[in-house]
Length: 90
Image (cartoon, one colour):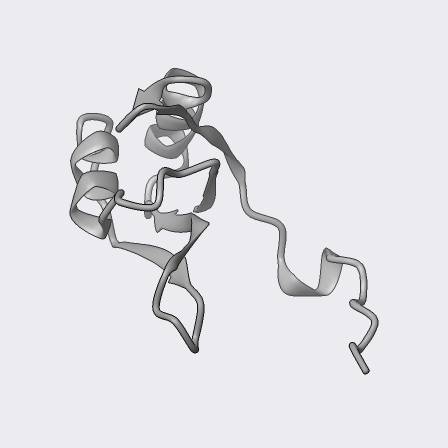
């Protein structure tokens, strides 16, 4: 299951995410999304967990908990096709 993790402090690393979620099961990957120009974190990321029951436990337990000074938001990631289209900037 792909899990969205939002409201991350800018100094949270992928290792921090792995550490937090590993308590609940096996982690396939953890990625923090960063700005392609500055390299600065955008304040959200994704964790991939292969076992859905472990992922559900992690989402329930970690949603609203504090990591590096910020309460994180955790829920199931929506597939790209389900997201609204963005208007191009001119």
